[in-house]
Length: 332
Image (cartoon, rainbow, N blue to C red; front, side):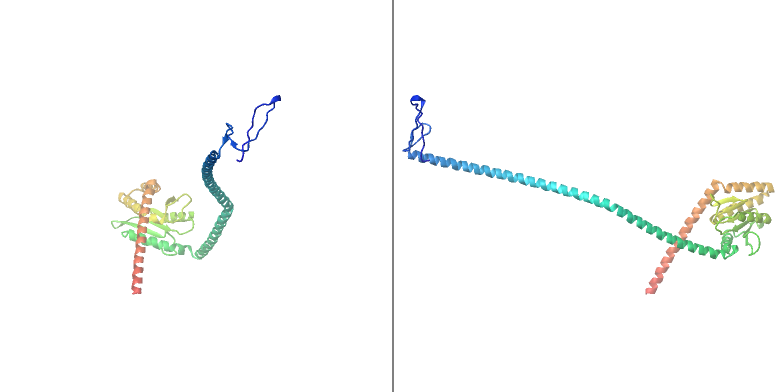
């Protein structure tokens, strides 16, 4: 500062005041006294110190503001990154959902095509099996009824002869009218009674079978007549009475013959009259179709099935052992 202007406020006449400028020496603006060069130097030094202090304070404050701004900016950036990640994840989920929704019709179409392919394949296999079945039917139709049922008759005769060796069991000769198998029940060397059996292996059970067997029973004077077959009327199974003939599954024949033999022998011992024997037969028929007898036969069938399963398993095991032994010997 080169000069300080001071104003003399003394009023002049007429209300005016005059200004006087001193340029020879600087004066204090407060008291108006002159400022020396030394004082001026101290003032300048003090002013520079104050300016330096103010500059340093401003620099520190500016650094703090910069630090706050940087921290705030970092926080904002982190928050922006988090929001951006959330937006990206949301967009990804929405895109996945939209893609799944878009693929759903294609997947449904693919599944429908696969199902249709399998159905077509199954239908083709069914047609092939039906053709094979029809071919087998045509082959069977070229055989006589006796040729069809003869193997079953042979098996039935063999089974009964093995189960009841004390009885006289005979097969009716081919071409001779009558039942397939006749059992003469023997008790203490005498014929106590007679049981006749027919075996039918047909696609359905005809009333003619039971009517014919009933006529054979009357002509033979047999106590009971049984028809062995795998076909039953609708709603019937295992054991059924038709035309006073016992219609039974082959698996139930042995158990029924055992029961009927006991009745024949009991009737023979007691020498029942014809009426009593008929009553006894009716009681037996009632017992045969009763739940107790069906349960007994069912249990016998289950046990027979379990024994057959054990035999088959044992046979398979023997075949495996035999096969492994043969292969082992051949490899040596």
